[in-house]
Amino acid sequence: MEVIIRDTREQAAALAAAVIAKALRDKPNLVLGLATGRTMETLYQLLVDKHRNEGLSFAAVRTFNLDEYIGLEARDPHSYRYYMNHHLFSRVDIDITNTHLPNGMAEDIASECAAYEYKIRSYGGIDLQLLGIGISGHIGFNEPLSAMLSRTRAKALTPQTQHQNAQFFGGPDGVPKRAITMGVGTILDSKRCLVLVTGAEKADVIAKAVEGPVTSMISATALQLHARCTVIVDSAAASRLENQEYYRWIFDNEPEWQDFD
Image 1 (cartoon, rainbow, N blue to C red):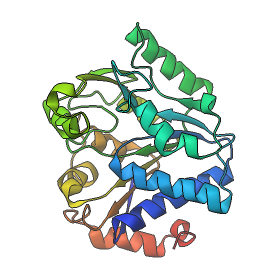
Image 2: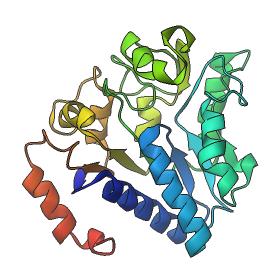
Image 3: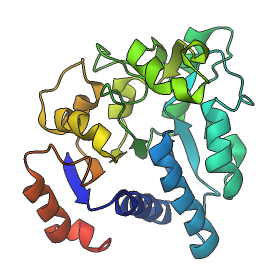
Image 4: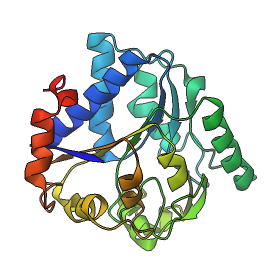
């Protein structure tokens, strides 16, 4: 794992967008894992700008999202399919048939999860997986006690996650109680992971995820085991990290990052 600290959330998002853009140019048929959330909205806008202004193409890209709520139709404004169509897919040159999310309306959820795993493998696995980290330390909807080797499955959402998401559903009663999520093991199978986290409210969980012990209580700590995981944070999110000086040194001195300076 490597940690890159940028001064502002805008700089952090811009760096993450540049990493994804470089990966797309290096491999136009990239298999790209995607995430949702407010932090990602800025990132997706930057990718749309690169598509419009720099000719960044998504024409051959295949995408797999981390998760989807169970019980929400794709046209529901609260679904992650709707979110992705709105913030990215409808605004770039991607083939919508190459964009994949779990089907939260499937009659047989277990079969849907198995089929999702099979489809990822059929494309050779995910080349680059984009991730955020929830307040409880989850990646995807891998809530506390998610097994490190878990695969795509249905997961009950914790009260903390439901409370966190209540603002998007008009109150706690409207929040779905379950979701389909890639497993921790599914995420760790990705060839590269790119984590984007900003804001002071994430400082505690970032410190635990990056510098704390690996534990199933905080699924993001599993990323410490990944052979190539980059965590990009702004100064606010990095405020509780003990090794901030070293992390800043990495961006300024490691050859890989000089192209992004």
